[in-house]
Image 1 (tube, rainbow, N blue to C red):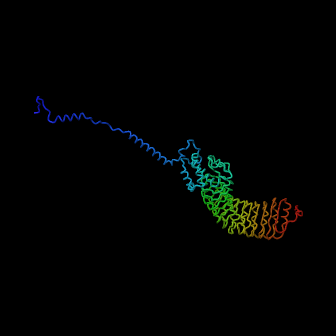
Image 2: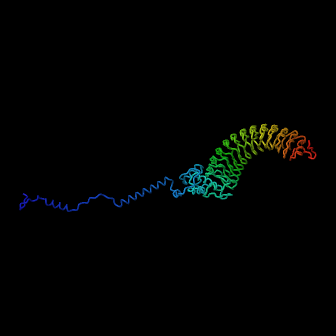
Image 3: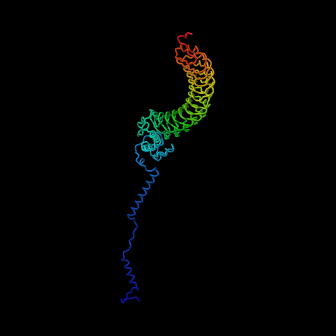
Length: 498
């Protein structure tokens, strides 16, 4: 048995070794138990991630708000002038250029150094903070382009132009170029030595009422963007060097009352779209190189009061539709090489006509008797043509006539005695025709203070009628008679008591 000599029980075999191992195990240091905690490096990493996220967010925000240009970031907190032309909002050079291109089709010129558009745009982008309003900036850009395109530095007077102040205070011929909202309504630079092209950016001035650039040296075509000036009432471009054709877009100017391009180098035809101008009162294209046939649509411009197409190269005939222009007071067709046109009888419908001129216009045929219906007519000038037949007796009904010139034609027959009914007549010239018979004594009934009778170079017979000589000597008037059939006797021999 497992008993010791003292009688005590002995531990089983191997228990001592196990006990020693247990003691050793208890004496060994036990592993420490703890919860995992982040180290300082992890805090650094978290911080870096946060910084990167903030930077990315800022970059994305800049991209989506238009590019991070310094002009918006540094914009003054001082309120800008109250925009009068509408269209406010965030503006950038890129968005402004896109808008210019949309309205003029000429935005690409802004990127070309040396152009008027480039110079004007470089200036106007400096104005964004001062005038943060797209229509106002477009107005200033248009004027700046005109300035650079026409050598503004050499104008007679360019005071104030391209300054930071309101463009309404820049120097114009008109004293009130803008309305109360700073809309430019009168662009008047008449006789100011503008030299160069009329730029298409003129079409950005959509609220213009008056455009007067006459008596300068404009060299280009009239831009098609002129059709954008929907509020335009008066357009004066006289005495320049404008070339090419009149753009059909003129027909879009439904409020236009006066269109005058006298003494330029315009060519092509008179656009039929002129007939759409229901408000047009004066059309003057005198002294150009316009050609082709006169459009019949001209008869639709029924508000016309003055029509001057003279000194051009029109051909064909005078359209009968001219008789539809019942408001006409003046017709000028001088120096037009029509193709042996006749004076249409429809002119008799023009009940308000005061002046009819077609000198040296290849007018042929006979004079219509309907001239007698023109009871407001004061001046009838049809000299140097191919007229034949006789002078209608009905002319005596046009009792307001003061001037008649039918010289240098092929008129025959007798001189109507009814001319003596024209008590306001101051001048009659029928010289260089084929008139026959005697000079009617009824001419002596005309006793205006000054009257000239030019009757020479005809086939008259007889002598100057005594009635005419008596008027000359006794009416206390300056009466000049050139009859080609002798002369009046000395006034000392004329009995004025009869």
